[in-house]
Image (cartoon, rainbow, N blue to C red; front, side, top):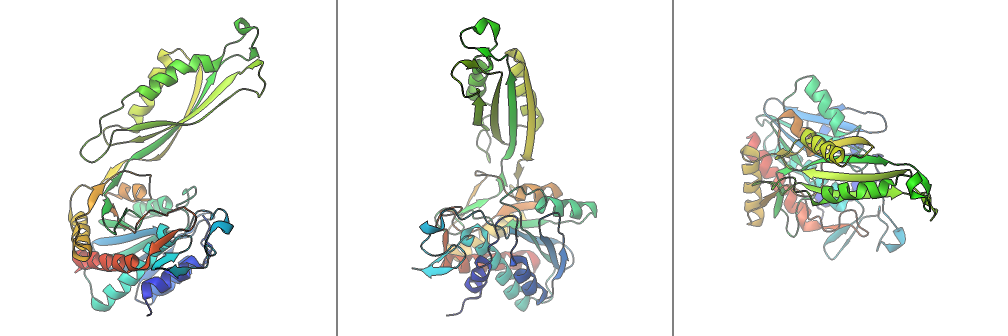
Length: 375
């Protein structure tokens, strides 16, 4: 039996859109949206393709997503080629099936059905699509948001199709995300011979007490919506490769996933104070990749909860855990942002797959959200 959602998802999977290459995905989506009266505005930056599509006027409900995918890994381990979609035992296999070409197909088909039923809908229905979410993201959603903000466009509601669910579609809805900031720390010492330590200054020895304190620090206790802030050392490097040389520098990279209890400025100051107390000579560079955001209550959360309960008869759990998403950029506009998508058990893995029935259910949920907010 022909299913529009699955058919479109398969067409998208056939495009080998390794980030930031779109590989023809957006042309497929644009053709479908133009056919139902959307105005398409390409917004390409550098090597990244983006578009902003709108239909109607007034209060805006946007659906956001990305066409790019992560590398496939060892193709020999896939049960079928990663860019040749296949359905086995009710599961749609292919790179991007769950993250997030399945969601894109569900969104577009939902819009087609919604427009057919409500050709003169109130408000504005929009799509914000990028080809670079999985890689650097520097020319993707963030640039589109900057353009929209520069011309003072308002977007009241945004649903991001990231795979939020864990076991059943809609069992988890992300109504916020933690912030993320990375520190690149170089502790400076004096290189020398291990047999003459008095003539050198070992930066590893110098840094260990500070790193121990850094790892043991309780940054906050979280709150109703966020877990406590987490600090994790991701990389550490020192030495010349020789067993008789005291290194001159120690490099340590660590990341904070932080809640709304802290600001990035407070984190920066606390780390600098700790390093100074330990009297280290150091260079410290920071990379802020996203601020925390939260959509606690409001019309969007209510509509999403209603849609999930209507089609799956479960009340979704509202969580803010996991990594970052492009929702962090969209939230800068003062937009209510939630993430609702398919089960995430196989994302980024070999043999990525998603239930075909789940994608059809997800599309119905998206359509109901459109109806609740735009009619």
